[in-house]
Length: 165
Image 1 (cartoon, rainbow, N blue to C red):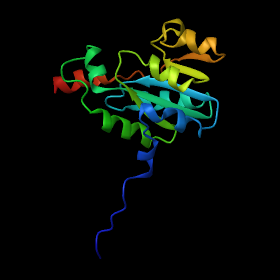
Image 2: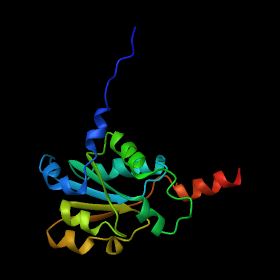
Image 3: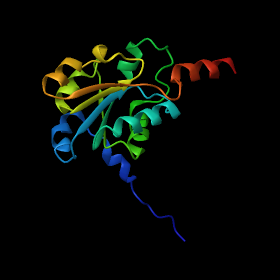
Image 4: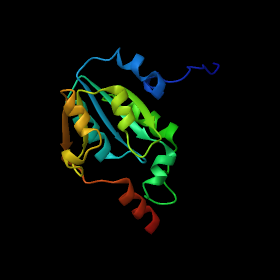
């Protein structure tokens, strides 16, 4: 038997360049939920949070920080551990995620404006009024939520544990 070339997995199609967002979002059912983050080493806290975020609407868009954007956050010289393309592929592979994009700026505000979500979500370490895009989403009639963490996990804590080994 020969080796079959199956082509790229279907989830790769869920990655969308910022320039293609309007066209791609038009195909998604609403309400549209938007969240963002580094998602450097995907862990249980991330996947639980993303599933909870998705439950607030019919579609979930995740915007990942570019590698340069992650570095500017001051999480360490060795971050991100995983490059953007890998982080986006992992996010896209999740059933609860409808579309994945990225941003190179320090905040995801431009992607939020591009997507015009009905629901804006961040993790429980973000008070609602401090979430980037809060006032814009409220202004067009959307809602903003800070989802409490069920599993206290972080890539930073995981990295510290690895460094101690």
